[in-house]
Structures are given as structure tokens and as C-alpha cells.
Image (cartoon, rainbow over all chains, first blue to last red; front, side, top):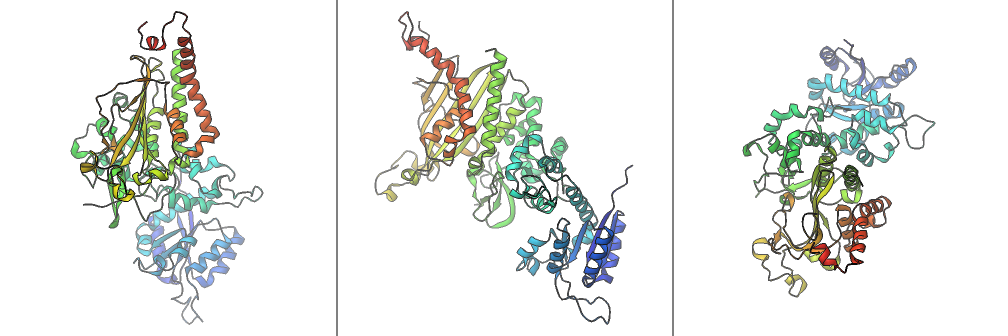
Length: 351
Length: 246
């Protein structure tokens, strides 16, 4: 059996002693992880040392509040800055390596999620709470680091590479090109930089995670997929093995809830021999017939209660409530931005 | 042209046209995810393995009309249809276009009687109503095989239910002799007749190539045969000919 790849993490935290045990636990949960914790005051020397030895970590994990604990008892002072400063430095030195932030505070009212949210999102590649690191860190850090590595080590000036990284279906490539940010239209190499291979692995990773995997359009999560197929979530869960081939398996798939390529979902149902005898073009009308599901197992519009809602809407009174709705029973969401070629965010009100 | 070749060409052309539509940024910007309906047809047609026998339904999609004069009515175009190929030959081509208005009572806003009183108002206030419908058919089994109808049967589906339609479903005549209209020709006609976000297609090279190909597939033979009918040396009238009377 092929041995799993080693992954090096550099954890920058003022509470070095406290987190040494956590690092051990992560390594215990995933033996391929090599985690080094350093105090922020040692960052410059450590980076110099790593650069010299050409042993650059795969991923940096930075504590947000770095100004609370001194390096050693009796030491002159604490680190005077927060994680943003360290992240800036890391970005400057290693622009293609991911920098994750970890915070003890997991309330959304904290600055990291509030007044400093824009700056944090611009600099860090992922925000993790300390609880998430303890619970899932061994997987998130490991698989994400591997994905970043495979993006970083891919050939640069080649658009096809991006599709390979995404494991994208051939017939979607034309449309995917249209939604790629401008800086990625020629692949991972920065535009006009043929001689300088430094490119945009971070931009690509960010776009994949924040747009492609998060905004429904090319990929659907469980609720969107069930709705697209005209089924309740429970019914879809039972039928999901039939749609295994449509599952997303590209970059960051391991650390994202299961997603399905929309075009592959329709390929699967339209290719079924029974589908040819049924004169229905829309998957939400066709699949309930194909799978002979009862009316109870078919999804219904949250507003009117009728079958065949074509999309998923957001409750205008509760942003976290997503429900199947008809277009005619919903409106374009007044506060959500629409991404071209992705599904239009719809809002609904329950009477 | 051999039957198989015709069917293959029609399928290839329709796939190209659907692909153009779903990759077009103007179309993608239309409210209500109109791309989703066209994509469904594209995906279905793509998986049809048999070139000789296939049929496809393009669910009606909606394109808002941008005309200041009509603004109070929130006018939209509703287009869709079906295409059927059997044994390598087209057996049914049926595309329709509706112009819809809201049933909002505009009498007060406009200061004159517009849209009211209307049979559509009481039960359908703030819903849509079909104010025009044209239905283009190519069906070799009936005469005239290629025609246009005003009105005809309105197929409600999915997102366009609750449209009020009072042009009388049962009245299918007159069927007015008209050249065959496929999705591309219908869209091309409508984007010239109405101001919509799709207006840039009029000059767009790839769109124009699709129109030229549609003309080639549907009109070339039609007009050639029509010219022969008109010049009939036996004195058979055009209508006698297309109604199969002589």
C-alpha cells in the first residue's frame, strides 16, 4: 500500500507550552502531520532557517491573538502585534503557501468575525476556531495542505491543469472558463509572466473554496441536489449511491461537505434507459417518475406546498433557513449578490 | 440528403445553439435562472445516443422586454417548444412565443383605461397574462405542414403556471402558411422585434452563424419548393398545392 504523504505545519502561537499537547494530539490522530510550534517573536529566525534548509512548511497556522503571553518567563516583552501582522509577513515571504488563522473566540461578535472581518478574510485562507482545530484539525490541516501542495506543484501556464485539479466534467470546461477570475484565465501563471512562474495558486484555492464550492450553480450540496431531482433530502440520501459518479472529488473535496456536479446529475438520469420513454426535460419532474417515488417522497415548495420547486430559496426573515421553492413563489434575494452563471439567490416569505 | 445525415445535423445544430445560449453572459444574467431550463434541454439532448430518433422539449424561458412604453405592464417574452425526429427525419417542430403582461390594474397609473376592466383581473391580480401568443409548427402530417397560429394550446409548465390565458385553447385555426421556425430563428426574430438584454446577439458573429445554419437547414428547401409551387405550369394555385387538394 502506498504510504501517505507527510505534511509540515508551522504553528505560530504565543501559548507555545499550552498548545504543544494539542499539536501532539493532532499528530496522534494523523501520523503524517509534522507540526512545529513557535512563538511569534521567533518567527524571523525560524523563517530564515527554513528558507536556508529549503524546508518550507506546507501550511502556516497562526493564532489571532498573539499579544497575550510572553515567550518565556522573565522575557522582556510580549509580541506586540496580532495574527494579521504575522500573516502579512508570511505572505510576503511565501506568497504561494496557505496561511490559516485560529482563534479561541468563536462568537461571531468578536473582531475577527466583525470589525476586522474584511482584513482577516483578505489575508488568511481559512478561519478556524480552536475547537475546530481540536476536533477536525488533523483532517482539515492535512488534506487542505495536500491540496495546496498539488495546486502549487502543478504546471503553470495551462488552463487544463485547473480542470484536472477540479476533476471537472469535460462538457463544463467552456462554462468554467467563463467564471474563472481574470487572473486565472491563463492557468496558474500570473498574466503576462511567462518568464516568472510565480502565479496564483492562492487565488485559485480561494476561488475554488469561496465561489465554486460555496455558491450553488456548477455544484450542488445535498439540499440543492435533492431539490434538483425533485426529491426530499431523506429520499435523496437513500438514492445517493446511484449518483456516486456525480460527486465532486477535486481540490478541497475532502474538507467540504459532499457536493455533486449538476451536469453529471442530469447525465446520470437522462442516460437511464427508462428516461428515454418519459417525455420530461427537467430533472425535478423526471427523477420522481424514474425512481417511482411516492408523492410523500417528492420535495414540495415551502411557500405554496405544490410539487416540483425548481430551486432553493433563503427565508427573507432568517438567512440560515434554506428551503425548496418555485421561482414563481420567490423573488431575487434583495441582499445577496448574484454570481454570473451560478444560481440566482432567491428569497421567500412564508405566509 | 440522406435521412441519418439530416437527423445528425439537426441534433448537432440544436446542441450548438443551446450551448451558445447557456454560455452567453447576457442570457445568464436574466432573472429567474432561465439558463437552468435551457441547460436541462442541453443535457438531455447531449445524452440522447440515437441520432435517428429523439425528441426534446425546451421548457419555456422568460426574457423581459425593455420598452419604456410598455414598462407599466412588466412585459416579458416567453419562449419554448419541442422538436421531434423519427427515423432520421424531423416529424414535429413546434416553437411558441408569448408576450405576457402583469394583470396589475394600470388604469390609475396611466390616467386612462389600460388593461382594465379585464376578465383577467379579479382572480389574477399581480399574476401574468398572455396578451399575444404565436405558435410555429412544422408537422408533415397536417396541412399546411409549416404554419403559424395565433393563440393555440398554451402549455403551462413549472415556473410559468398561473399565467392567465384567454385566447381560447380549442381554436387551432387559422393555420397560416409560414416557413419552419426553430429555436434559433424564433429567438433571432424576437430579439429584433423587441428590445431585450439579448439585443447584442443581432451583430454577434457566432449567433449569426447559428442563424445562417438554421436558415440552411429549415428554409433553403422550403423556399425552393415554394418557388416551384408558385410557378406551377399546370396552373395549380399555391393554396391548392399546400392543402394537398390538387
